[in-house]
Length: 173
Image (tube, rainbow, N blue to C red):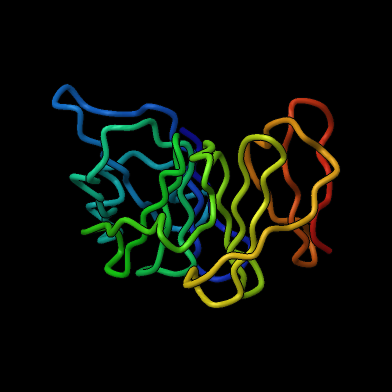
């Protein structure tokens, strides 16, 4: 998967597609939030006291498609069949969060992103959601596109882009 620093603070974005070890467990590693450290060998980071953390035993057996951290402790994972989990301890444990999202067809969620104090989700059939209360509730966003959105990106100035098969489209300024 891809891992990079978020646009503000120490937020982290990881895109995960079916990444599991031999036991069927997802393991995500969170590295320091600058390009030099991100590209360093793990042993060099450890010797410099810049260790990474691992999230273990994410309680799912479905395909995970994205993860986003608002800060060092609070994050979300999305995946197939309306999979949505939340952590408030830096990824050490994850709680099911689907009940906070109205997705009665159980459509796949492909993108998750925190930006400007809001949480955004994107998925199949042009599905877009925004939460202004840290994921306690989600409001659907109007979308002119009825295909799948496969990810979300933060734009300079705080806008959000939803990635589709064709060119990228702005969904929130």
